[in-house]
Length: 418
Image: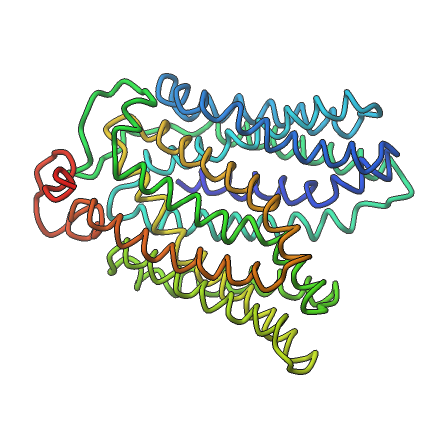
């Protein structure tokens, strides 16, 4: 598990090391223009959407470790070639390899966490993963920003070469992992072990969780660097430095609150924790509305906007030990890879659609933007409570597995008639 967490931290570090500077690198340093730079960012999303449906089946058949090693090698080759690419075709192909590799790392690492944890330790394991991911992203962006120089192509070549070296180092670290057979939740649905999308879509609780996950990522993560930032600059008059402070507040809240909220989350119903996150994010959107639509001072608007990002961070800290373990506990024996990949695919779809919708709306229609995403946040609470009625007692309250034996079976009785 320690090696897996090192893998999570290093992969996040590599991502934060280069992705914030991709646009500048392609558009200005390589002189390929803004349109090509936009295509590169789109290629990242498209590559993920293409490979993730196949990644789940590969994880089920081959195991998460071989798939992770292949993804790391692909990402290393993509990063190295991206640092050397000088033409549009070379940049796009390199970005596709890097994006595909990074996308597959997520479900592979998540499945390894499932296989190395039990019902007792899974929430804490995923909380640690999320903590280290944010720490890695922040440190990567900070260090990468000090290495780049827009007047020298060689500084970016060095940047991408270091990222490739990090991925190859991670290959060496992860190759030493010996995967145990994972214990499963006693009442997870036990159907055919053969992976198929038809079987997954037949799990109505998982389908509801995927719908809920789409709304979660669309209404929060999909707005961070697009709609919400556009809204802050255009409607609230937030400076770029204040926007940076808001992003830092989000990361700081996650780092500070992650383990503080863990005991509360571990002793609460998962469905109610997610519902509480929806309410917290609703308050965050109210604060955002005050920042852009209120009549207070510039200082009050900035404080409200920073609070918005901090409240989002609090919700994220509550979700990390809740949603990912729930995906694992809904998966039948041997199907965690398929379920993790499906949920990662939903996340990528939300992250692709969220900025496309939120960016123009936040910049040009601030009031409808805030009202729309306030409604989405309240919708999260409704969807979470509905999901709770379809979960088995141990899936919703995993601590029950330590106090009583629950027979393995399908969905709870009320879901069979729903």
